[in-house]
Structures are given as C-alpha cells and as structure tokens.
Image (tube, rainbow over the protein chains, first blue to last red):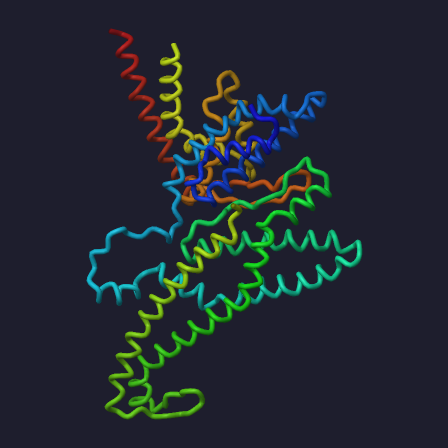
Length: 296
Length: 122
C-alpha cells in the first residue's frame, strides 16, 4: 500500500531497479506522477472528505502496483532503442573498410553535424545560463529576485530537456523524453526549496554554462578539419584546371605539381579521420550529457 | 485455485501485450482531438467497467512504443492546474497500420472462435 504519490514513485523507482536506463526511469516516473495526480485531483473533487491515502488505494488498483507497472516498462524498453544507437556488435569488416566505411555511416555524419553546429546551442543555452544566472542571482538582493531566480532555474531544466532531445537525435544516446516537474500538493515555498535543493537543476545549469566554450571548441575544430580535408581533396582540380591557389592563412600559394597527389591523398584520409573523431567526440559528449542531464 | 488465478493472469497479460497497441490506435483514430494518457485510460475503463482488461499504468509504455514507431505523435501541454500533460495523436502511418491490424484481428478472432466452437460441439 502506498501512503501518497511520492511513496508510490519511490517504490516504482525501486522496482525498476538500478540497472534500468536512468532515462527510462525518469520517463516512467513522469508518466506515473502525471497520471496519479490527475486521477487524485478528480477523485478528490468528487469525494472531498477522503484523505489522499484512502483515495490512492482504488487509483493505484487501476493504475497497477509499482511492480506491475515496472514490469510493463521493462518489457517494452528493449524495442525502443534510439534510432541511431543501433550498431552491430561484431564488425567483420577489414581495417580499410572500417576506416573509409565511416563515410557511409549516418551515425557518424549526425555526430559530425552535432559537433559542427554545436556553437548554436552553446551560444544560446550558454549565454542564457551565464547572463540569466548573473542577472537573476543579482536580483536575489531584492525580494523580487526570489521568483525570478526560480523561473530561471525552471528555464534551465527546460533547456536540459531540449538539449537531451538534440543529443538523442544526433548522438544516438537515450535521453529523457518527458519533462520533470515538481510535486504538486506542496506549498509554493516548499516547491521553491525542492527546486533549489535538487542537484539536477545545478547539474543542468553547469552543463549549459560549459556548453558555451565546448560548443565553440567543437565547431572550431571540426569546421577547420572539414575545410582542410575538402580543400586538400579539391586542390588538384582547383589549381591545375581553374588556377585557384590554395589559401592557407591568407597566403595564396600554388602547390608544386609533384606535391599535389600527396595533398589529395592527405585530404582523402583526413575526411574519414574527421568523421571518426566526430564519432568518438559524440560518444564521449553523449555520455557526459547523460551524466549531467538525467536525474539520478 | 491460486494457480488458476496466476495462469489466468498470465494468459490475460499475454493477450494484452498484443491487443493493447490495436486498442490504443483504434481509440486515437476515433478521437476528434489529441488525447492524454489519463483520458484514454478513462475511456477504456468506461468500455469495460466490470473487469478492466489491463492496468492503466501498462498503457503508457505502449503509447511510447507506438510513438517511437511513428504510429502516434505527441506534444506536451503545460497545464495550469496540474502537471504537464502529453497529448497523443494518430499519424497517417498509424491509420494505415490500424487498418491492416484490424484485418489481422478479424481473421484471428474468426479462427479462434471457430476452433473454440468446434471444441464445444464435440
């Protein structure tokens, strides 16, 4: 029997077990909390004299016990892997096939695009986190600052969910699909304290702040690598046929003809290498995002 | 007796795992507007008050799975009075799937009924 919704959620979390994907746990808890609170609200309006514990008994009876609900989620989750996250376990391809095969892998290209465009979320989320953080923290000197700071933290949690969706779509790492919300039934001040005390809010804030420099580094590095490999590959055609010199850091130079094949081959190697690097960086960033943006 | 109840439960659960998706698609296909989980559960309950076929909590993972397969789409509406709700809507691919699943269901039902009736006649 469950005392209240929080008690039910704690039991559900326990039933899902520590080995379940944290993102799945967050989704299951979010679904259960929304449903149970909506049901409670409705039942309470019909029977205002009953206590939450009394009303919860039939509501939970219909919703299913924590163990039944956990079993339903665990049974379906294996079929729900992120679209880009599926990789064969054994790769029978030779080294060369693997090295150049990356050019045909959609997961490598999507990780590359994440890296190439990382400055956009970095700038938006990072500057909001930094500037919003400074302004709202400064406003805490006045009483009006309290709600402003609370709203700021809420916006950071929204950003965390959004960034999670981008990370899942492009890096193929399972991230939460449902928003977190604070318990209903708490007073405004208790909710505020819960929001501030929840280390998820602070981890999300730190992630958003760090995305600013990280985004710039990712975009800088990968655009440079991409431009270099493309210009190396095209340099024989550009120089010999169209007479366009290689523009290296502002110095227009024509490559000696005997050196052009080497430049061309270097470009051909650099492009798959860039994609391999993007895949690796994407994998590491995905794990980092999962550690920071999923409630433990 | 306990064994019978357990085996009945298990049988019902196995049946549900296949039919829940069909039932949810059908409810959402008939709905005039997007619906959230609790309303869908209520609708199903109204159709079968005596012995609800499946626990409401088991509907949500099925909804997620249908959404993941592109048969449903959803959006979150932050409600003013309560927690934010996720509204589900059937997609074109969901409608096509519903049509072929309904045909499969009709055939299965006919087949099982025939076998069961044949057994009763003996």
